[in-house]
Every structure is written in structure tokens, then in C-alpha cells.
Amino acid sequence: MPTPTYTALANVTLGSSASSVTFSSIPATYRDLIFVFSGVVSAGGGEVVRITFNGDGNSANYSAVFANGDGSTTSSGTNARRFGLMYASRSQTVASFMDYSATDKHKTYLSRTGGASNALEMIAGRWANTAAITSFQVFPDANGFASGSTLSLYGVIS
Amino acid sequence: MTLSALGIFSAAGAGGAAFSSDYELISSTILSSSTPSVTFSSLDTYSSTYKHLQFRFTAKSTRASNSSDLFWQMNGDTTQANYRAHFMYGNGTSVQSFDVGSASISYGFISNSYPGNTFANVFMSGVTDILDAYATKNKTVRTLRGANLTWFDGSGDIGLASGVYLSTSALTSFTFKDRLANIEAGSRFSLYGSKG
Image 1 (tube, rainbow over the protein chains, first blue to last red):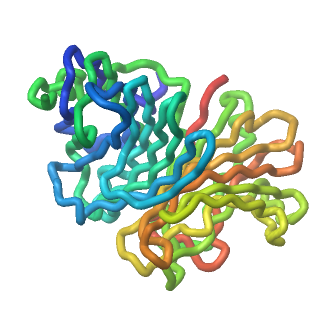
Image 2 (image 1 turned 180 degrees about the horizontal axis):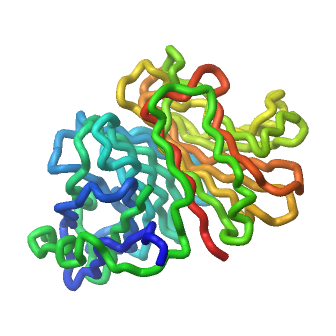
Image 3 (image 1 turned 180 degrees about the vertical axis):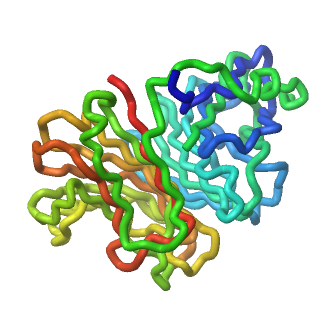
């Protein structure tokens, strides 16, 4: 049997709304992490979903650049800890955390996010820290993840 | 509600389910010293095993600048007419798109803003797909890549690049090349195959 290359590490479907979701005790076994979530905001309209690594809530340690389109216009900007978009109708996000356990690199992520009825966006983000990622938390800006949102984490070896 | 207390991760098991994967690691390298290019060769060996190939990488340049150019090349072919590429990116200010076909280059395009050595520890991340890698048709290569701090204003960029190698010859090698300097030590390139 070949060595599993792309391994499911965690998978959750929220049974109730949640202001944030944290994945902790992430081992350094893999080269990259791939994180997928499909969600709906628990209240209100569109929101930015942000990320925190290893409990570091200092936005000065983060940077992110994004580019998006909504079917009529495009835009680009910078927005620390920006990780995804979520709306009242279901949206999806797929992100890679590259070399997440390396200790000689700032941690970077690539995220693709959007909802079919709203907008499409790609994001490159950086956590200015060389520590291995052992946990991360995702949270919408204002409200939370609605019940039924799904979040999955995978590890990729190299 | 924070779900970490529920032990989602540990409940799933750190080792994960041992499913047999149709997405497999073929080769991986972390550069111990800087080099002008990184080549994955003998790719024809995998033509009966995999349908698609994917490279995942983190890279930076030795160039004494904020950024450099990262290109790709197939089969060692330096014929300019055999490459064509378009890219679209956002640089923190606007979204732009270009046709690289008129740039007089003999490589495919990945990024013109992958980090130079101005900023320590800052690497670009990228995922490059070669879809239908072994079909007897022109080869298409698609990349999502992004980096921070690489532009003059420090915003970095996020972008997509799509290119074609205008040859129906069998794929034998794929090269990542820094057009202006060397690829820095510590850069990592991994190759995966997907069965079809």
C-alpha cells in the first residue's frame, strides 16, 4: 500500500453556531496543511473570516493581500489576517498552509474563497513568525459560523 | 463557541485514516544551497501511473532586491515560440492582467514578484498544476502563487498564471528557473501525481 500522501486530520460539522473554531495540537508530521470550509454566517450579511496562528492575536504580525471580483468589478487590497469570505448563503474556502512546520520561514498561506451569488477572491497571507504552526483559529469578523458549517483539515507529506 | 475544547483534532486522530491515496508524492527537495534552477527529470517514467502532476513549493530568490522572476520550462526547450502565458494578479491596489507572449522569453511564467533577499525568511508559496500531463497535446500549466512584502509598498501580491507549452511531445522534464538570480537555499519544491 502506498504511503498516504493526503490525509484527513479533522472534520467537523457544527451542531450549533460558533463564534470561532480552533484546531489545536497539530503535529509537525506533514509538509503542508490544506484547510477547507463550507459555511454560512450565523447572522447578517457578508463577513471577512480571519485567522490566528498559535494564539498570536497581534495583527501587526500578520499581512495579507487579496484580489477579488464580483461579476462586475475587481479590487485588490491589504488586510491583516484576512483568510476568507462568508455570506448568508453558503460559501466555500480552500487554503494551503505551506511549510507550516518549518522553522526557517515565515508562514504563508494561499486561500481561494467565495460564494457563487456574491464574489470570488484569492488571498496570500503571511504570519511573520518562524515558529511551527501548532494551532490556528478561524473566526468571522462580527458574527459566527452558523450551525451546519463544515470544516476539514488535511495534511500533505513530502 | 470555541471548539478546541472539544478536542476536534485529537478526536480525529493525529495519524488520520489510512486510506489509500490516488494523490501521491513523487519527489521533493529542499535546497541546501542556492541554484539557478530546479529540474524534475525522467517524468516520462510516470506516464502510465499518473494523469495529472502537481508541484507545491515555497521559494525565494538570491536577488538583492524586493523581488525576482520565477519561470518554468519543459523538456529543456528554450524555443521562445513554444511558450505562451497570461497572468492576473492583485497587488494591494488594483487587479491587473497581462499577456506574457510579447515579452521575448523562452520560458513559461509563474511570477514576477517572488521574494528577493531583502526580507529575511519571506518565501512565496505556489501550487502549479500540469493537467493531462501525458496527453499527446499541447501542455497547459496553471499556477496559484502569492507572497507578501515583495512590492515597493510592501503589499505583496496574489495571482494566477496560466501558460501553455506548444508541443505535443512527451513530457520528460520540468524546470523552475530564476530569470534574474538564483533560487535561494531553503526553497522547497515537491512533486505529486494524481491518478486518473
